[in-house]
Length: 228
Image (cartoon, rainbow, N blue to C red; front, side, top):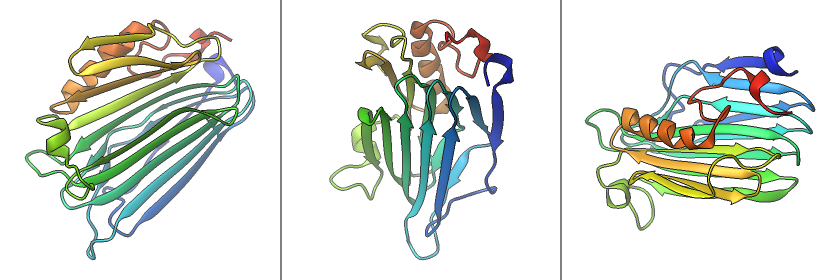
């Protein structure tokens, strides 16, 4: 499917969760030549369980030849006391396209942060393009959210993979809280932090503006604009 024929889905979980002890596994497969746009109905609120166990959310994404995936989920909120492992693994064909945007918030309003281990892995044709591991919060070994990020309680990434060439500059720092980095000839990564979610989103949007159309939009654009 291409252009206006892109498949669009919105994912919905429970009002809150996962909670400690839960394990969610999600497998997403975008077939050859297809386009899939994924959004969430609401944020993912990760809560502690009654017995102090960790929770896990594992997503495996596969995009086949000539496929495109645009995945813009709502934020993951690590509530006080939680211990959560959030894993995103993307496997792309050599000519597949991807736009993935993630936002993580450490604690609810006026709340101490929970502990979150976030792993992001993107591979093209089996080779690593982006491999990132963040261990945050009171339970992180040798670290804590406050010592690493100071007043910043929100952090995010945008990954764009385009086989026609990574968009935007090879490297740029739009402000002190964001950066644009070309990871290889086909992939660019935007990272940002913010004191809260609105500040984080503003910085991600501003940095994405350097990528040009159609990637510059904070949300999915009609995919007829994506070069084929």
